[in-house]
Length: 354
Image (tube, rainbow, N blue to C red):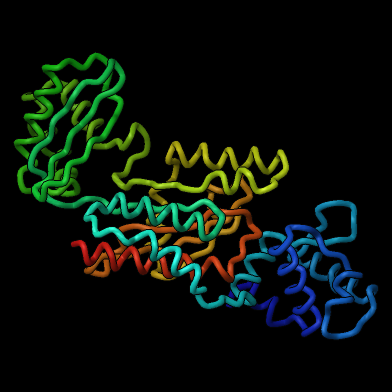
């Protein structure tokens, strides 16, 4: 049993109810709640002084804190985590929420990226938060690879897969690249790529470059490594991150400090820092996971929470994740079933398409 589980178990009924009421009030309004307000709402009739003593005890345990000089309290991150783990009541998915998500999938298109983009928009609309969708890798065998110079610091790699899928990836090439070195790099890759997926090709490239180091110049080696290691100029994974609904966080009546923290969060997301971690975190279990504030280093500066669930392909292999980003006072009881349903739906749709 965790420390928070022990604390919750050792609480008496009054302390547990006071704690639950403070957290539920905070999740609803974001405002501190005082002992006089609690006294009116509690099922047990006790004095405000008694409630103040209980709140002080909860503050001593690190579960509540006073954000201002006032007597009102809000939950700490530790308190929110204990509430989510031990007291959160997750409701059933509401029919209106299910219908809004289902309505985005009326198209029979085989375009998985387009489908995930619509899912992200729907998830953001339903939850009034920002949605996060980590798209799966495309793992069909490669048919052809081509490099195209766009500018002195920008280049395009065109990947043609055996199933007809085509991807264009923009990256920053090494300094001094020439059309000749780009053709040489493409020829080198195409000689290796036939019948291999990107993952398989990645594993082969390092050893092949080492073995054939004398056959291609250093510039071509760098171009090969740069062209296949970069997605849109940032990050080091092939997964595509889709973020929708940023305005929901930026226009939700936040104070200036909160606004700046949230802007920092989305600056990080746009640069795709630590995005690969989502899949690793989701890979630890196939249920919905809730990360509150600094529990995820990506959100440590933003004061935000992430509710995320992995989705699987037909072979029950985790290939991506969907989630909702919002303030720490998210309505977790409503958001959890929405994220869970969306992840299951995405997995089924991708399995059907494959």
